[in-house]
Image (cartoon, rainbow, N blue to C red; front, side, top):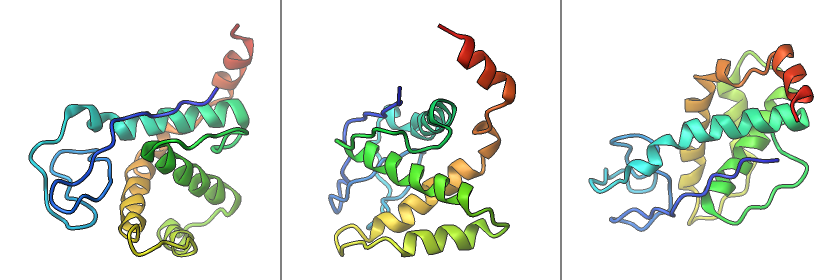
Length: 148
């Protein structure tokens, strides 16, 4: 079963851009202003995304699960990140920065959501810096298959 992250949607109080303020003092990815009224609930977003990636990799052998419903902004981010990590798995490269830039450039962004390209890039880098937390050992796979 997939792990969906459902957080109350957050809009920048300055420009109304939709984003997840996943760390303290993160600027709005659109207007670059820092909001002072960010709830603590958003600060675990990267941890939850890592959990979601691990669960999918363990259950499906890939990051994008067989069935995925995108009904919220956080689930949209999850889906894009799943696609990126699956593409990265298929295209082993030493130049992850170049790969991710090309991947995100290949997506057609409309003018209202172009800020999301850089924003999702920053989310990817946050997760990739902790990529050791994504690895699923052979023992974990075996224990997972044995659990009931």
